[in-house]
Length: 252
Image (cartoon, rainbow, N blue to C red; front, side, top):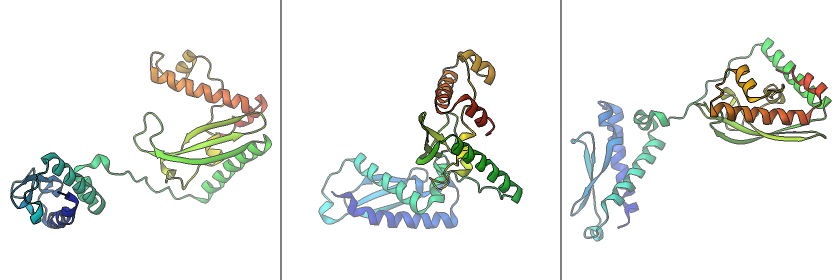
């Protein structure tokens, strides 16, 4: 029995239930999200709500399918997947009502910038681009993906591959864009965004790092962070001279 031939009838019945629920619904226990395949009788596929026994519908079988046997779990999983995908795409409010953890987080709109803010940002960007020019360094930012980046991230953000290159060294690394500026690659970081975040000082030994930044010396997470910061510092040292690093320290 090809279950796909019954998809349209299932969706039609499901849409009827969704229309009723969104108009006069009496609580999430009556949500069509609870509908599931119940059984196959002689001439019908029967569906009912797992939360409300008064909510059900049936789909008539085609004559040639009446005597065909199909494993219960196969029918159940087929219509379960169809139900969720249809409701999520066409009735998202109903879907996320019972699955709030899956609801995409929409970042708040950026604050309105004053003329003073725009001027300060312009000055910061000029400072960074002047530094790159003075040190003969090229900058490239390539969108990689929208995902969690930092260990404690609660929201996904845009992740970029950054390449800083001059005659001394080429440093390629990932950069997590701010949440507010993450828009699936539409707002790439500026040279200032990246340079201001680079490690600009020798972090010393692990114990020194923990004392300076308040980490627990017995923490594996702290050690992993230390290794990442140390690796970044070593690359900065290879890119720039001590005199250039002093100029870089002013970009913050």
